[in-house]
Image 1 (cartoon, rainbow, N blue to C red):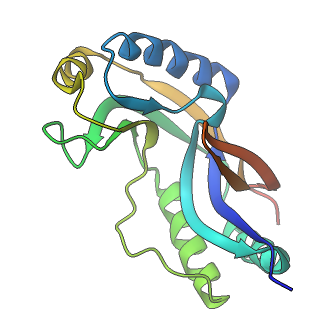
Image 2: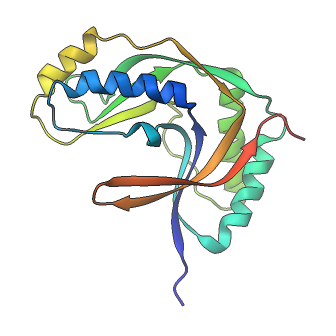
Length: 190
């Protein structure tokens, strides 16, 4: 029998009030009528680690690794501020909101990488560059107009208290990804 695979990632959820503020920003950016797939407000999150397809049979093992990674990490705050694009504003592929990276968040990320790699989950090859993805560019239509709006638009600062992280699953559908929590992990718990 074929194993059941879940497209999985570890994320910091955003409070509804911040989702609403980002949604208001997105409604302004949508007016540029650019070829962008905007992230729905309910899907906004900060990815700490994308795991890809994980066998359902390995979920408990994943949860043990996440619990180990959160040990000794107290709740912390992040500040969302500014807009940008990867790889750059001339050739945008991903539109994002930036953030500061407090020391506790960097430690949490490093713990996740270390503890999950011990359990044979793949390590991230790219440098940790936390951001809030708000849109993915699908074509050139309206891009110059949109990037002009992005360069003139301010966002933040918005402070977010991070008290937990969440193992999430992602179901890819023709209308876009649908995310659902698998398990929540409180910070500051021994």
